[in-house]
Length: 238
Image (tube, rainbow, N blue to C red):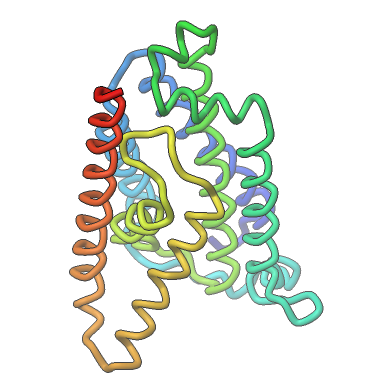
């Protein structure tokens, strides 16, 4: 990465990531490809491209400007920049999801896609927007992580998919769609990390963390499934 302008690199990374999200949204919203398969495939493409670009070797960022390093390692009034960015995005995002009419349509689409479409909501547009915004925010998270550790490695983030899904489900998000909040997901992330930290303090091997995350995910999904079935039974009974 010697000789490459770091800010130009950041801009390119954000554009490429956002474009990947847009493409995923197009295939899911317009073509109708299963979201899980499409995002899994796009993850493989992105990770493969990272391996090709770096030849599988970590790339040091020792010569980057101090301003870039400050984003990941600096702090304001004693609070790390990363924590501030995370907190601001979580608060603003949660507020908008609860009170913004356009973003409320995301819940309607996830809850009942056919009903949302019949009510005049452009379901395809909603899906494209969601995946595009998600990819944009993912690129920001990646760049902040890069700034913090100072090394670009193609294996960064590998294996965190299970923990991310677990945190979302624990926080109240439903795999059936239409439920969940950003604030709830934040609580899920905190709870999951508290569990992992407790395991470390108890000197439990780190290899158990993924196993426990899997058990937590299955338990949370099972509870969610049972809850939905009971709700359906009550509606039918009425």
